[in-house]
Length: 377
Ligand SMILES: [Zn+2]
Image 1: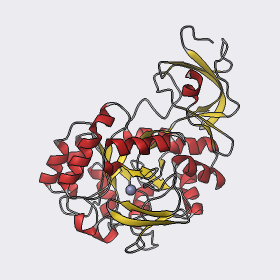
Image 2 (image 1 turned 60 degrees about the horizontal axis):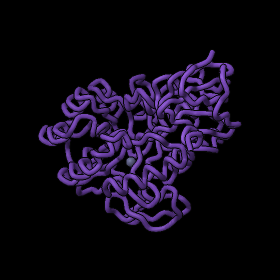
Image 3 (image 1 turned 90 degrees about the vertical axis):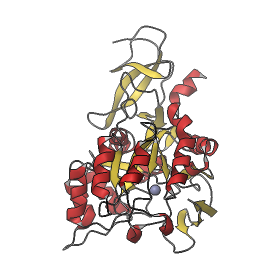
Image 4 (image 1 turned 180 degrees about the horizontal axis):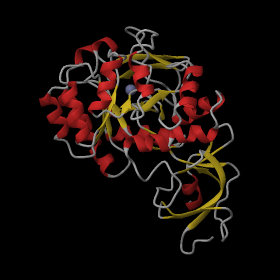
């Protein structure tokens, strides 16, 4: 098979969605999009044929920052974050904001609106303030609130597509109605930062929630007589399961077990804060002081884990190092998060998708974060 025209041909071992593995194939890239694709050898000379494996660019649905900057700091800072993650193969991100007064959150969201309009950002994720004081993690206790109808009204009044995801603790006052209204408006509702029991968590999915904010973290542990949110999430095929695979948030063996058991629903996230891509030192998260030591970010006040310092490339390599096949890990870092957010043109290597092409070695390390751009320049 061949594809004629002005397209640039990329040939090599391509990630295959159907079987989560790699096979010889080709892509015709035209104006930043995949115009055609096929398996086997290309019928015409390839402009680029890398020796490594070709995967779709990574999709990070939960991240706060990187390179010393955070999404709460406006469009300029957001571009710094995006560039830092893009250099490690993450080509699609949504911007996670932590709990704050609603006026402040609305201002932060509107400051990012130009980047959502331009396609640089896939949208904004409100991780707070509608979360449990008992499971606040690194959020500011004084900023937490219930998702009252008036508060939900304000979020729904923002331009459609701007807020792409919200996190809600399903046990809060007004949560049921909020989940119903937000999900009906096309906003992804993730359950998390919660003290809910099994039944309450389960009812959140019945009401319209479709994901879990960092499974295991900021929620009750799985107990043999009180299995809580973790088992409710495992058992519910409607639930996408976010996981921070950094070896600190969740034991790496437990993280690997989840990836083995639920490859169709696991979503690798970074929950990265400003220190991602930087060294140890002092930072802030949503205005709260954070110290990063040995790559682990903790609030200086109470020692709570305050996001991670990894990129999705690190998460992918950690999964592979813990026994997850590379093709499966690629799914968890690209196709699954794209489906979770409802993004149709990323997380795949077929016609119509963006030509976000990442070259990996066999251990999942990024050799080239943007093959198509390399070929253009
Ligand atoms: Zn977060």
